[in-house]
Image (cartoon, rainbow, N blue to C red; front, side):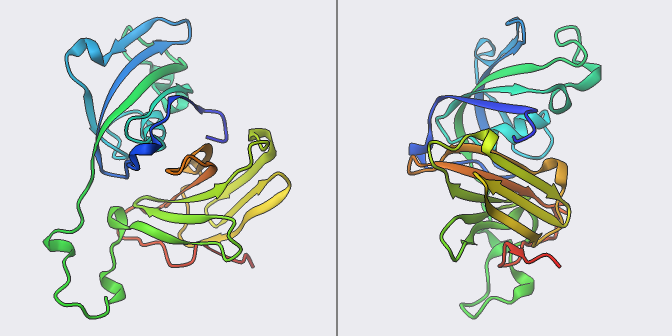
Length: 245
């Protein structure tokens, strides 16, 4: 995450699995939670089974929803989470004090994917799909498109779209500048403009972020997460951005 409130360090890559969770998927993880001083406050392995939750639906802290969404099945990563995305000024019981930065060593064991191929999404014939019946909200998943110049591709992931751009090994976080506003997106990489324009949907600016990770081919990439302001009933149009007025 570009603002430093969520930092992910990969312990073991999992992109060989080719499976990355999307909004609403049930994920199974093992984790160890610690405070900054190293004190362990929770360990799923001592419970006798993995912890399961539905991604992106607010069943866990925001740092988990955002961090686990960037992981591949089989990946193990350390998430360092700012209080704003964790337990805030109230803390959590006697184990986690107020305004605590926490760390979670998370292993993504399994992903049970949502299925939008059932009766509610089955079309009556093979005729051209009516635009009004295209999947919206959490069902708005799949390929999006690509930059005509070949600089990036983008895909639909329900509540967000994710832009994926190859990133040279010598480009680091300090060379990436961004601006996320409800009706404008700007991302500059190494002095070159990657994204600049009006997004297809109004954005929830505070939920947008970028990260450096590897794609399913093992290539180093910049992932830009653009989160829709209205998650339900909205479909991102076929164009990622339009020129700003």
